[in-house]
Length: 185
Image 1 (cartoon, rainbow, N blue to C red):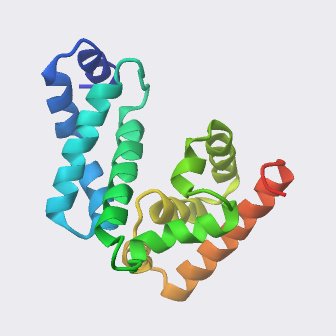
Image 2: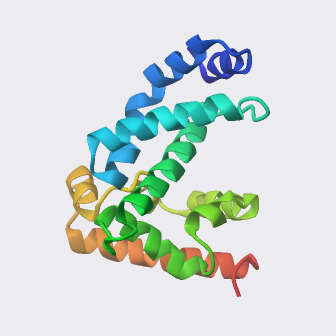
């Protein structure tokens, strides 16, 4: 089924819409949640929570791209779960380091709150279009999928040094771009 049909079924309160969304995008959502939580059980619970959140938010939302919509929901839920799980422990796994890297640049508030702002989302999308494919792929793997540096190295065949330097330079380019566009001072 395509996204339009799935969203329409959820809109009409047909459970087949949710089961279809899970069949089509469940593995994608689990991949993101596992990279954040490092737990299959927690990732499964987050997937169920994300599907419930989609059920509760459609309507009034009517996303055109269900994969992206579910990806955003699962990331928010998984990061919240990670924060609850580690609130007392004061630890920061590699998957959440990627959030810290962006938070240093964007400033006050969390990345999740900033990403909610439509202007920032648009600017980041526009910025990504200016990058070479390699830079864009590494950036998306790190900050959308929460892949560790090691996972990116294995996937791309690049050395750890090359991946780290490319990500650092890309973050600097993003900071300069956001300043140029008046988002950052």
